[in-house]
Length: 256
View 1 (cartoon, one colour):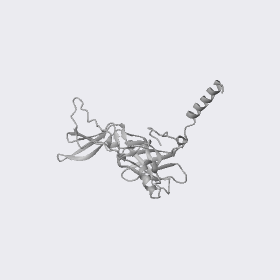
View 2 (view 1 turned 180 degrees about the vertical axis):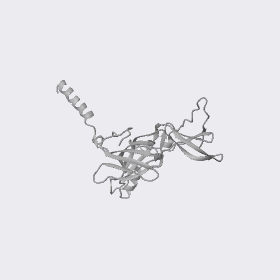
View 3 (view 1 turned 120 degrees about the horizontal axis):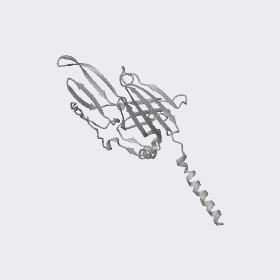
View 4 (view 1 turned 30 degrees about the vertical axis):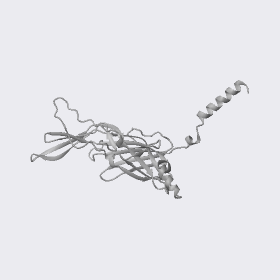
């Protein structure tokens, strides 16, 4: 074989290697993009929280290899899928309101407020736990160990959590810090909830509506989108989109 022919053959092999990846890398992945909007005050519809989450479907036998091997040793099969964590973010609007109380046996108002803030850390996971119905899903925010998209488990509590306390401005009264500040499923960069009452000012850790939010839903009629809302004390509107695209269609946008 002449040298030019050898060079051409080598170039073809090079292109084939990089342009035609191994079969395991070309298997399409299924992503679930969740968008949530929570209304915080029934008297003020501008008081809201938003959250955006992307999860990817991973078979349980790959998420739990040891458990799968044990089940298979008894002739069974670990079915179902885990919705592993890809990315998440959250945002809350600025808001303040008052509550009628009594101070020194006189009518008074307690003012409660917080500032606009983006998330610092948000943790969530889901699953397709019914092997007989792959359209049925569970989703929730959590601080328990979560499966990442690289099939490794991550414990949110293993990451240090540092909260910035209230900043005292010249000429203003100092705010007392009350309660403990701990890692939660949704942690804002500004974690403070401000109180003012009866001549005192203090702060507590802001607790997101999403901290204990869980969703059990189902895709119907071969549709790849879910639109719904919760009723009761927590009013949350949500969408779940199932797609082969990794890009969240509403990422950090206040729209559905």
